Amino acid sequence: MTHTATLPPAIQLDGVRVGYDRRIVCEDLSLEVPTGSYTAIIGPNACGKSTMLRSIARILPYRSGSILLDGDEIATIPTRTLATRLGLLPQTSLAPEGIRVADLVARGRHPHQGVFDRWSRVDEAIVAEAMEATGVSGLSGRLVDELSGGQRQRVWVAMILAQQTPVLLLDEPTTYLDITHQYGLLELFEVLRRDLDRTVVIVLHDLNQAARFASHLIVMKDGDIVTAGPPSEIITEALIDEVYNLPCRVVPDPETGAPMVIPRVRL
Image (cartoon, rainbow, N blue to C red; front, top):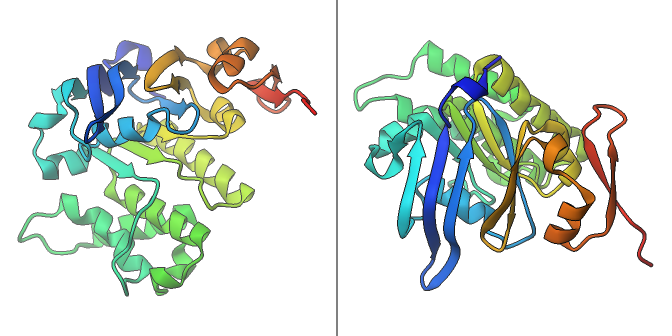
C-alpha cells in the first residue's frame, strides 16, 4: 500500500483561475491530491467539479495560477507524454462511427506507441485485461453504437484502464450504470489504487458512495473548495446543510463504518 503522507502530492493547484469565454467558474482554486489516494470530488451541480478536471487534463486552459502533475507544470509537459501520465474519462464521450469495442479500447494504447512501433502481444494483453476488468470482453466484436448507455460507459472505462496512466481522472464514471456495476467499478478503482499504486480522482454525486470508497474527499461549492480531508473527519450534518442545503443525519455505515448521509423527511 502507498504511504501517501510521505510523498509529494500527485496533483497540486495553486490560485487557478478558469472558465469558459467570459464566464469564470473558479476564481482562485488551490488544492492538493495526495499521491496514491482515492480522491472523490463532491458538490452541487455547476459548482466547478468538471471544469477543474478538464483544466487538470489540459483540455480547458486556465487563465492564471499553476497546476502541477508530480511537480511538473502541466503546460510544459508534451502532449503525448501527458497522455502516458494522466488519463481522463469525461462526462460524455463520442466514439467514432462504426468502431468496434475492442478497437475503441485499443486506442488507450496509442500514447505508448511511437510512430514506428507495432502492435505487440503486451498491448493485446493489456487491452484484454482492461475489458475483462470492466466486464465487456463479451462485447469485443460489437459496434459501440449498438450498445446501451451502461455498456458504452464500461467500454470507455476499459479504454482509460488500457492507457495505464499512474493518475486517473474520472468524471461521474457511474453514470448510466445500474447499482451492481456502479459498485463494481468503484471497487475496481480501489483495487487499482491499492495494488497498482494508481492515484484515482473521481467526481461523484452519490455522497454515500464517495464516503465509502474515498480516502480523501474534496468538497466544492460555487467554484471554491469548502473543505478537504478524510471523509470520516469532514462529513458532518452541518457541512451537508451548508453545501447542499439538505437537513440530514450522519450515521456510521453499518458495513464499513464510514459516514452515511440520511436526508431528513421534510414533507
